[in-house]
Image (cartoon, rainbow, N blue to C red):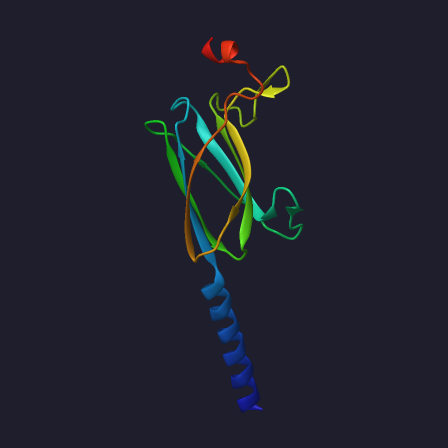
Length: 139
């Protein structure tokens, strides 16, 4: 009986080590922010933006304060080959993606990031010019 308990404990420890070995990380750098005001809010979940996220997935989320037009943050212990990420620059600090005429008024980005390696990096830029013409961009 004691041998059986020891064997079960060893298998449980081996299983937890194997899960840790397959966990991945992602370091994200957002560049060319429009200002250093407010914060950049982000959330990531297992899955793909175009195919949907996993309903059992626990979201990884956070907030980063911009400095010199950029922010950095990371996601650790990801147990997936890709993650769906949503990021926006909350310039006025109201924790909402503000809109003008139905279009985002603050920079944002929604994408799927593949995680081929144990440690991954991504340098991204938010989009600020949703549906605006060249004349509107210069105002």
